[in-house]
Amino acid sequence: MKVEELLKLVEAVGASDFDEFVLEAQDVKLTLRRGRPGGSLVPQPEPAPVPAAPVPDQPVREPGLVEVTAPMVGTFYRAPAPGAEPFVQAGSRVKPGDTLCILEAMKLMNEIEAEIEGEVVDVVAENGQLVEFGQVLMTLRPCKP
Amino acid sequence: MSPQSRNEDMERAGALLPPGLALRWYDRLDSTNTLALNAPHLPAGTIIAADSQSAGRGRLGRAWHSPPGLNLYFSLVLCPSLPRQHWGGFSLAAGVGAARGLAELSLQPRLKWPNDVLLEGEKLAGILLESGNGRLTVGVGVNVNQEDFPPDLRATSLRRATGRSWRRDLVLAALAGQIWHWCRLWQEGEFERVIGAWRRYDVILGRCVTVLRGGEAIEGVAVDVGADGALVVEDCDGIRHVLHSGEVTLKK
Image (cartoon, rainbow over all chains, first blue to last red; front, side):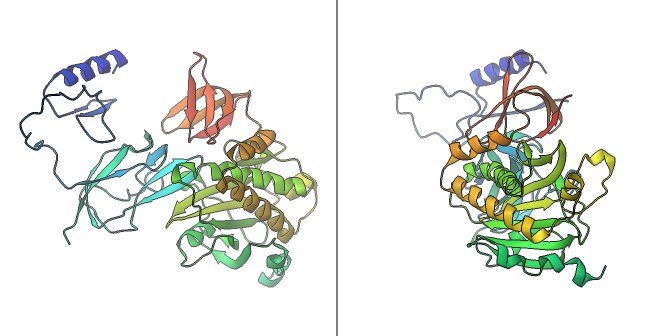
């Protein structure tokens, strides 16, 4: 997909009412979400100065999910070696200390560990992808105490 | 060779180490890094070393061939208090330490980003850092007395480069001491000093390189190493790529 086409898409989604937009094509996976703390992909318009009526919760976002973010810039790996089983996938149960993924920076393989007990809802980052500091890698649903 | 005689040169290795470092020597481990990351209660400065490894590894799960009686395989435990986004720099600090240690032994090592240790253009030592459990381990494999390598590895050993055999305890003391020293400087925030020292051993800046990262290959000139240790490569369109990971090949 060409960069121009991507930019047009981003613009079109930005102008629409969608909260979330996912495109999966042969060579690209694009996820756009609106109003996500720390990780918005769409430039946010200035907040309207007029206090609006209480806005209902966004239907696509489940409340209470915990985001696992990148503690450093690096390359994201889901498995300890190419071809090996991924550490976790959607539905995996994890407890504190369990390895979720690896971030490589300068030939340092950083194990990213779960800090809570819960279930993996979604692995957002792609294997082999370069991720920025603070970027969301996956979401967890904490288990109820 | 009996197990006793093949380890003779390591019997008093712990006593040669500088203050702050303590050696735990094993005849055989799956991987020194695995033990260094997972054994409970290992203070910073612990060195896990083994005569041989059954599952020694390099980057991305690649095997590091670890036969007994010949080489050094060790992992140095660190417990950094720096924010984690700075931990990648320990990789370059460890490279500087290894190079300094070899220079103490009157050798002329060079570094290929981030920390491959070369002697006369061939790989002498590999360093792989891993973190987990709030700990960081610097895993080092040094080819000491091994004479034969598969030709496609482009590897060498101290013995091949100098024509004589080496005592592994002396090599360990020199390298571990310097790696410990330079990693502590990084921990203390002396980033410029560490990167400056790294540049003096560098073999790639100003040269044409190919960097493999994930599925993509970036070709260009290695122009700089940033304060955080990232490699900057300028491609033929003048675009600068800041690389935090990847495998560098020098173009002839």
